[in-house]
Image (tube, rainbow, N blue to C red; front, side):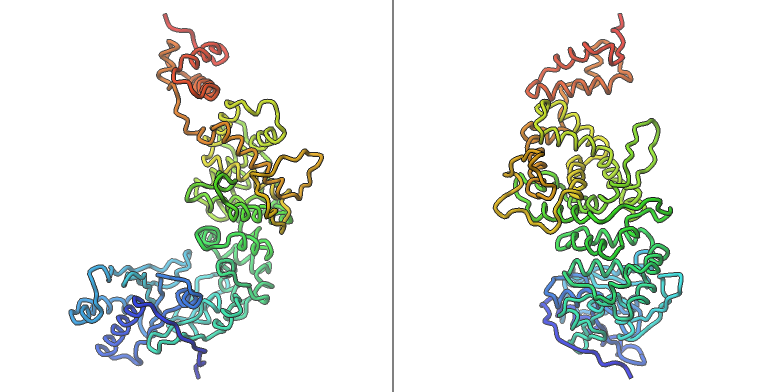
Amino acid sequence: MATQPATTTIDLTTREAQLKDLLLDAAGYVNSSQSTAEPVVLRWAGGWVRDKLLGIESHDIDTAVNIMTGEAFAEKICEICEKPDIVEKHKITDTDVGNLHKIAKNPDKSKHLETTTIKLFGFDVDFVNLRKETYTEDSRNPEMEFGTAEEDALRRDATVNALFYNLNTGKVEDFTSGLSDMKAKLIRTPLEPFQTFMDDPLRVLRLVRFASRLGFTIDSAAEKVMGNAKVLDALKLKISRERVGVEIEKMLKGIGKDPRRALQYINDLGLYHTIFTDPRKPATELPAMSQWPGAYECLEHLLQHRKLGSISDILIQTDEAPHYAWVLAALTPWEGVDKSVYNSKGKPPPLLITLAAREGIKAPNKLCDLITAAHNNRADIMSLKTAVVQKTGYINERDRFGMAIRHWDAKGGYWRLQVLFSLLVEAVHRWKVGSAISSESHARDVPYVPCSDRSPANNDEFLGEWQLFLDHLRGLDLMDAPSLKKVIDGTQLAKALGVTPGKWMKEALDVCVAWQFRHPDATDAAGAVEEVNGKRKELGIPLPST
C-alpha cells in the first residue's frame, strides 16, 4: 500500500492559477481522447514548491506527469492551445505560449532524462515523467523507469526538494520529511546519506549549495559522511569537473547567495582538496587550511560594508567581479604552496593555483589568466602597498605606480581584483576570524599604526593599511592608468626619431608613457621624444638614416 503523504496548501498568484487551470484542461483532454490505465495526474515538483513555501518568487516550474513522458504531454498542450474555445477560456494571448523545446539527456549536466520545456504565461515550464532510479556501482548515471510520486521523491537529493504540489488536489504532498525539515531549516537526504552520496556524489555539493543559499543547517547524519574518503573518491571518479564547476559557480555567484557560508561548509566538511585540485595528478603537496577562513570572512566583511570610496567599492566594480572575487578567496590557500614566479623565455608551466581553478572547477580562460597574473604580481603589489604604509620616499612618483598598474593589467586584466587577491592572501594570516570591525570606525578613517604598536589580529588596522594604499593611488589619479590615452604612438615616435620601427619600440613607448605620468597635463609629445632620444643607445635605437 502506498504511503499517504503529509499535506499542506499553497496560495497561487493569478498567473500561477491561470497556468494550473490550463494544465488541468490539458490533462482532461488526454484522459478523454485516449485510453489510459489511470488518469493523468500533474504535480509541480522540487524547487518551485520549496521556494513558494519560503516566500521566494520563482519563474521556473518543473511539472511531473504520472503516466506519460513530458514530451508527449507537452505536445498535447500545444494541441489544445490551438483550439479557439481554450484560447478564449484561458485568455491566451500571442505571447502567452512559446515554442516547445526538447532538452536531451545529458548526464554531465545532471540531465538523466529527456525533458521538454515550454514558455507558458511567463513561466519556464519543464515537463518530465515521474521516475525511479537504479544506480550501478561505478556510475552516477542511473537506469531510469516510470515510478510513483513517492519513488520520485525518494530519489531526490534533499527532502526540501522532494515536495510536490498536486494540481489535481490543490495540496502540497510530502512523501519524506520535507515540510518538517523546512520548518526546522534542515537539509536532509530522503534516504540513508552514505548510500545517497555513493549513488550520486554530486549530491554532496548540492546539499552545500542549498544549505548556504537557504541559510539552513545540514543534517548531522549527512555531515558525518559528506567528507568520508569513499564518498570523496567517488566524487572524483564519477563526477565530471564541469559539473563540479557548475555547482561551485552557483554557490559563489548571484544575488541572494551566501558564498561565505558555502566556503565555510567546504572547509568544515573537508571537501576543499577534492574540489579545488587537479584531479588528473596525485597531489604532492596540499595547501594548509587552518587559516583560510580569514580570506572569506574578510571578503564578506568588505562586501557588507561597501560604501562610496570603500575598499570593495574601489576594487570590485564590474558585473563579474563579485564572482571572481569569491573564486580568488577560495584559491588563497594555494598561494602558500605555489611560490614560483616564471621569468624565463617560452611558455611557462601552469601554476598549481591556476590548475586548481582550470582543472578543479573548469574555470574559464579569462578567470585563469587573472589568477595567474594575481599570483605573479602579488610581490610587486605588496611592495608598493608596504611603501605607502611606511611612507617610503618614492611614493609620490606617479610613473613608478602608474607603470606598475599598467603592467599588472597587461598580464591578466582586472588589476583591481589582483590587488584584492593580495589583500585576501594577507588576510589569511592577519584577519582575526569572528571579530567584527569596530562599529564606530571605518577602514578609510583608521590611521596608520607604526609596526612596533601593531597586532596582527587588529582588523581595523589591517583594512586601514589597504584603504591608505588605495586612497594614495586615487590621490595620484592613477585608477585609470591602463586606459591612459598616449600622447604619441609608435608611428609618430619612429618618424620623430627619423628611423623605421623595430624591436626597440615597446620599451621606447614605455619611456614615453612613464614621461606622460610625470607630466599629466602635457599635450605635446616633444618632451617624451626628447627623453627617448636621450636613451637611444640604451634602448638600441639606430641613428637616423641620412
